Amino acid sequence: MRADAQRNRQRLLDVAVELVLQAGGEPSRDAIAERAGVGIGTLYRHFPDRQALLHAVARHALENTIGAGETIVQSGSSRADALRQYMHAALDNGIGVVNMIHPLLEKRDWPDLRARAAALLKTLLARAVKDEKLVGDVSERDIVFATIRFARPLAIGLSASQERAIAHRHLDIYIDGLFSRTGAQPRSGATKT
Image 1 (cartoon, one colour):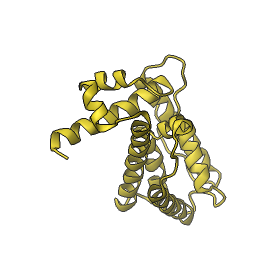
Image 2 (cartoon, helix red, strand yellow):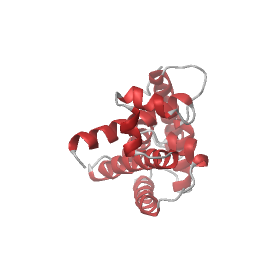
Image 3 (spheres, rainbow, N blue to C red):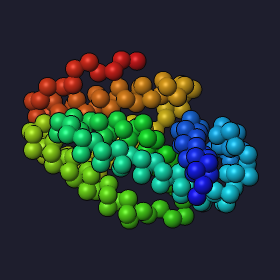
Image 4 (spheres, rainbow, N blue to C red):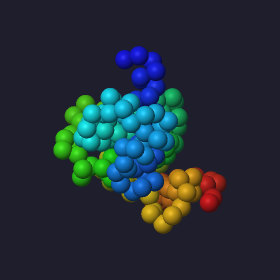
């Protein structure tokens, strides 16, 4: 794929994630193309039908989130802090769209991404528990579902930046609670809104 075509595809996916989170559901193709600054024909060349677009959007959010988590694990962040960083990166990468468009997808399974995500979460949790920062009964599913809950828009007319600030603040409160269950000190200076 040519570099300009790749940039257009990336821009369309980034915009689609933004619009799904803002609208709380599937945006129109015209809105995606307009915000991305491309013609509707460009959108259709990359995503010829609704399922191709929705599948690519979900996969885009998953790949970005998992990739960010893998980078965090390799970065040498403290073990407990790595889990926090991953959950915040998931919010920033639009993981909430996966839950919002999941019912609209005909094909809902990505075995390659599922395997990467499972390995990543197992590593993050094992490291946090090993450091005695996180109680051992927290599961990978707990982390996935909590992150998705915090990533969903509130649908009360807040701007995207307000939504994101609140989500990050609430996520910090949640994580602090997980850590405080073991007597660890909560993160100082939680984000204020």
